[in-house]
Structures are given as C-alpha cells and as structure tokens.
Image (tube, rainbow, N blue to C red):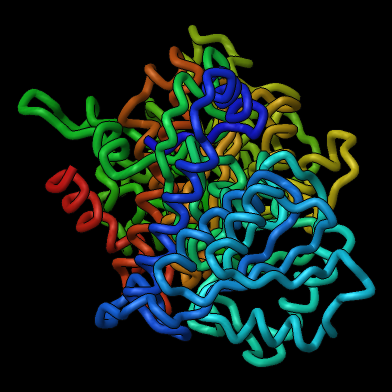
Length: 553
C-alpha cells in the first residue's frame, strides 16, 4: 500500500535526524541528480525518458534549475553541481533574493551559470529567460519547499505563468509529456497543495517528481496528481513518519486489491457468495439498470436481485438472464443508477409505488430506495427487515438519504452531485469548488452524513472513518455515459460478498470502495487499450481483470 504524509509529519520525522547532523540535503541532492542523469541518458527532449530510446551520454546536455529560497531550491542547486561535474551544462534561474547560499556556491564552483531574476537591475528579459528554460533538455523545479501554501507569488509566479503560457502556445492542447523539456519536480510540483492536492494557480506540469522520505498527499490527490508525472520516492532515512496519526492518504496497490477480492471456496454457494439487491433504472433510463446488474454479475456476485418496474425488469432479464426479478433477502444494496432525484417522501414498503411501470418519473423507484436505505441505515426494526446491510448510493438515490448514515453506506457522487448534496446541507460550494478541493469536500460530506464517500473522477477520492484513499487507475476514456452505473454494480457485488463484516467494521467499506474503483479503472483500460470504451464493454471486461488480478496477486 502506498501511504502519503503531510508536510508537518515529514518535517517532524526529519527533526531528530537533523539534530544528529544527518546530511539529509546531501542525500536528497545526490539522489535527485542520479534520477535526472538517468532520465537524460534514457531519452531525448520531446520523448519520454522511460520509453525505448537508446541510452545517451549526459555530457553536453542542458539542465535548467528553477530555484527559490527553500530547501528544495538547495536540493536543486546541489544536484545541479553534481550534474555539472558530470559534464551537464547547468544554469540556475533564481527567483529569490535568498537562495540556498551553500548550494549556490557549490553550483558555481562546479561551473554552473546563474540567472538572477530577483535583482531587477540585472534581470534578463522575460523572453530570453523563457526561451532559455524551454530550450533545455531537462528542467528541475525547485521553486518552493513543502511548507509553501497557496499559489506561487512574486517572481516565481510570474515565471511559471510565462512558461506555462509559452509552452501552451508552442503546443496547443498540450496535456502531457513529450512537449518541450523534460520537467523534474523536487518533492512536489511548485504551486500545488502539498497536503491537499489543490492547484490554486499556474503550475509547470512535471514529467517526474522526485520526493524525499515519504510521499506527500498532493502527489496522490486530484487535481495535483495529474501534474506530478511519474513519482520516484527516495529513502533518506526517515523513521516512523506520521507516528500514531498514520498517513493522511493511502493508495491501494495490486497486492492490496488481490488481498481484498473475495474468492469462493469449495463449500460456498450463491447465497454465501453475496446476494446483491439492485434498484436502478426507469422506463426512461432502463440502460442504467442493465449496466449495474451486468457489472454485478460479471464481478462475481452470487446472485443479483433486480427490483424495479416490470418493463425495466424485462429488459434486465433479457440482457442478463441470471438476474432474479423478485423480492427476497439481500446482503447489500446498489441504489439509484438511472433514477431521477426526488423530493422528500415517506418511507414505504419494499414493493411500493408504480410497480407495473407507473406514470411518475421514478416509476416507484424512489419508494423502493427509501425502503432499502431504511434497512441499510437501521431505521426499521430488524424483526421485520432482517439485519442491517451495506449499500451503494448513486445518482438519484443521493437525494433520498436520511440525515445520518453508517459508514457501511457508500455514496458515489461525481463532483456536481456532491455539490448538490452539500448545498442541501448548508454548505456553500458548487461543482467547480468540489473539483478544486476534492479531499476537503469528500471529507466534509463524510462528516455531515456519516457515510463513506467515493467521489468519482479521473482520480477517485474515498473518505471513511479510518482515513482517505485516492486511486487513479483508469484511462481518460472512462469518462463516458454509464461508467458510473458499472461502478455501482461492481462495488455492490463487493459489499455483498463481505456482507455483515462491512456493517461490523466501520473502516472496511472505504477500503472496498477504493478496491472497486481500482478494478473499475483496470477494466476501462482492458476494454480497449488506448482507445474509446463503452460502459457495457467495461462491465464485460471485469471477469478478465479479476482473473488476472488473482493470478498475479
């Protein structure tokens, strides 16, 4: 499992080492120089160093260091000195009046050149500075340290703004590596929120980030994670980072997902493998029901019970004859896909509403959802309904939440839906605000509702009572209609397999939600590698993804 720690936690772990005279900056700078040299050898400007390019000499290649006043600027300067001694032509662009003095002296002794932007009288024209930076083979971004907050300010902000604008002008639509110099960020891309992943101003997108001691949350959290490139963690000898508080953000790896995935044994049967109840779709949107049910079946649910209007049930059973369109006990619910939002209405019996297709927009689905939520949240007597079960709450079902839910209820909104949910609970935030600070608002929605929250996006953020996860495993092609319905069915099947354990172990739902998001992303990539996908293709790819996961572990 990948774990990320706040800047304060990392600094606290550094303090005892610094007090003993451990040369942390020397270790960091040497490692940074080593990584940069490897990247220079592996590739040419305009190509990805991790690609198949022939090894190249570093002698004569050009590196530009972007240097501020913090320790990351010192790391960059000392790394530049190492590179200069290996024959790299190194220039440092200093944006502060107080760059790291020893690092600056080391660079000059090694033959490096310095461009001082902090001295107005000697400042080179912007056009010259921008051209110098963007014509380099590699740029090392050490403008600010991990303690910096907010957007880049002053000369550093002006410089990065000019670089981003010129880079975009030269390559319209640029959104990834392969344009201009290879950019290596020191610890985190300057201008990103180290602890929360926010991006409040211009940031020079990195192709690689070299981070020291421990990963920082902003390297895993959106939107900053999309600006960090490949992340290289360097061990500089920190001990017990985070202490009892633990990491701020986690990310599951393949072995973690394999450990969590339920595998049937010789004594299992369909009921012990997990029965999922699905309330999804209306006569207007029957496809959402098909997608959710298909995903649940293909993910390995022991049984899927579909609850909805008869005409939708006929469509579902035609597509998935394994589905059972009948009432009965379930071990988890998947609720809301393809169902419109609703106003407040009273709790009803399970089969209530317009069961034959009805005239209302929801065709009786709202009342079925209210019943299922009442069971999941323990609002009805267990003598009548049986024990409390976990639930996935998506789309229209989000508008039917009770005031408080247990963490075994997992909400799966996108940013707009989360903004609506929060606004209904008195928070002043819109979709853009959620997208700017997804961890903050996912955590706030967890605090307000008690539920586990899975905020969908290119990087999915999950927040539960035991902390936060961020998974970024799917291709951008996965942003397509119906993909969320597939995730609902997939996660529902996983919750059903664990059943009562999810209710008894408050933090388990979040970990399972992160695992489901990961498998969902892998299925998106497997459905059509490198190209567009349809939601049903993603659902159909699930068995192969799960089999591959369990084989490779």
